[in-house]
Image 1 (cartoon, one colour):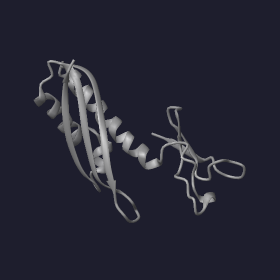
Image 2 (image 1 turned 90 degrees about the horizontal axis):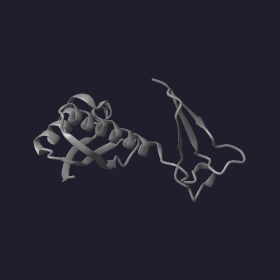
Image 3 (image 1 turned 135 degrees about the vertical axis):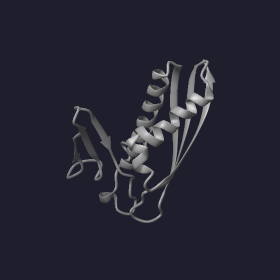
Image 4 (image 1 turned 180 degrees about the horizontal axis):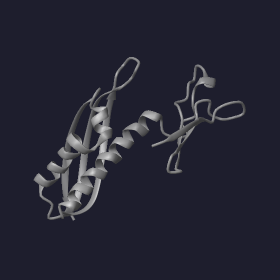
Length: 149
């Protein structure tokens, strides 16, 4: 797996802390920093997500992918899945994630709570490399809601 991150800031640009990542599969993701009122030359313009937001989003995508795949492989009639991640970070550098809650909302026909709970557990204990890695510094908790539909 590869990714190249390039600084887009510099003379004549709006954001001193803008970056663009190009993934090995050819996709492009913009990142930016928060504005710094005291030192505008060191801040961003809030034009794109922060890198840590993308890390959190990646973890959400990784685990949601697992949950849907596990349910589909179990022949459950899953119709939708979203996960809301809420995180806290350390106060001092490195400002790692210290707590992350993942709340899944799973929609389907005839879904059984035990099957969804098992899919979430399998993701976090065995398959989701992103949340397993983040679990080295963060206390990760999960919850879920089922919606018939």
